[in-house]
Image (cartoon, rainbow, N blue to C red; front, side, top):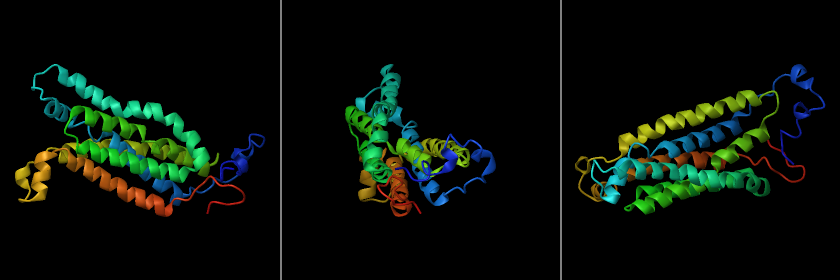
Length: 239
């Protein structure tokens, strides 16, 4: 059984007066904030690469600045993430029904972040394309996060809780391109001699991916520590 949603009388269509008569249920911020953090990271990871994708395409395919194939190949790479998400999103809802919201959400975050790092290490166009597609394929955290919010909300507070989804995703979509544009293609001369300079010379698009991955790691850890499962058998309850 679902906790919160199915057990809350405000969800019972046979009692429509509850919406008017009952006081609004307090928002369980301890559970909501980690989910909003996950959605923020999802927005960052989705939009991070767009500032530097054309440069990555030109460098990996050895295209000139005026080559007419650059826009097409950049568009295909930009669409790869969403294509993967398109195919995989319908799977994560039923999977989280069977396995639980928390393990599916944490697994999706970890795998998607690993593919983001691999994308930053890409030295060929098709490897980068594959990483981007697989990153989208494993990006089920948004889908499962919304289901988690459904589980912990009821008819008296769902409008307030769900209104923050746009804030979290929008903030991530703003910060992602800024981070990607700021940290991509850093001049190697700005780093001291040693491994860091060698990394910047060989992988110019790794720094923004690594920064986003570090951010995702912090959110993953906070989610693992503070998020409780909402899908239980028997009489277990969500505190």
